[in-house]
Amino acid sequence: MEPTVSICIPAYNSAEYIQDTIDSILAQTWKDLELIIVDDNSTDNTYEILCAIADSRVRVFHNNENLGMSGNWNRCLSLCRGEYIKLVCADDLLAPTAVEQEVQALIDNPTAVMAESDTKLLDLDGKAKGFYKRYHKSGLVDGKEICRKGLFSQNYFGAPQANTFRKSAAEQVGGFDPDFTYILDYDFWVSLACQGDVYIIHEPLNFFRVRKDSNTGEVMGGDRQKNDLYVGEHRHLLEKNRQRLVLSDRDILRSVRIRKLRCFAASVYLKLFVHK
Image 1 (cartoon, rainbow, N blue to C red):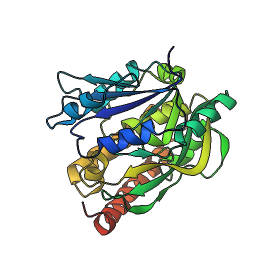
Image 2 (cartoon, rainbow, N blue to C red):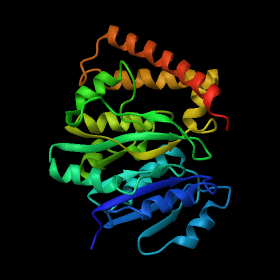
Image 3 (cartoon, rainbow, N blue to C red):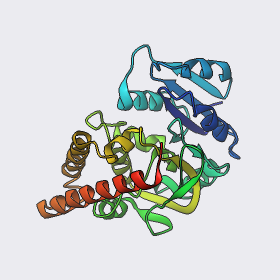
């Protein structure tokens, strides 16, 4: 029988932390799940670690050439057999009841295309570094409302591990857009949320490791070229959603300015509180 839930880990040079990530997924109280891990042709011993733990619940795959983030994340989606999907980056963690609470919310609320929970931020030593909260409302919220409000404040969807979504909704979106490098997940969440409601759980059910050497960390850490590319992608996201989120030229200009300010604030946070 096919599992109800598919959890995906797109892995690349993740040997240092991936075992902790896997352990947190296999410890879920929701047991009817499969774990899919796709190694994107790592140059460290990530794949060797994965081969040693593969079993009936853990399906391990290897790309013969590096597909990049969008390519590997889309391959993860293509391998899912469950009705509900969660994608977890290879250094992040889940609380034991994360899948159960989010999947049950989707089962109980047919109009919800995704369910999400608050995030606890950790450094590489596992020490708490704060919280990242979802949109201020709880329960069912119109997805377009969250998308539009977020463009003028913050990305309320957060990192991948904070969200569980319906496979059918992801198929309607068509997966992750290869036009994006730095905000491909944000683009994906916006496209998903615009299809219906989002169910919000204000409880920290997932953990995100804050890293200076991550994709986002490099952008926010002061690399001018990458920062410019990031802001350019944000502008592309706005243009892509101009009609369905009713965005004017003035809205787009204001959103870009806010994004630049948030990048600067994030760079200050990294310098002050993240040492690795």
